[in-house]
Length: 64
Image (tube, rainbow, N blue to C red; front, side, top):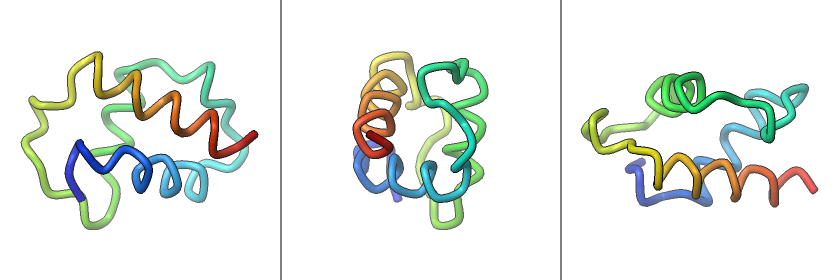
């Protein structure tokens, strides 16, 4: 899984953190949760604010 796999990452996060409101997650925590996902294999430094915003938006959509 790479940073560009926004939809897949959002699904994984919603399954692993079902009690979490994605609108309240700090980007530092979001970044750490993404890089900890099984199968995630990308440069940790590439997870900047724009990609984290996209992941957060997809996660919000996933749980609605």
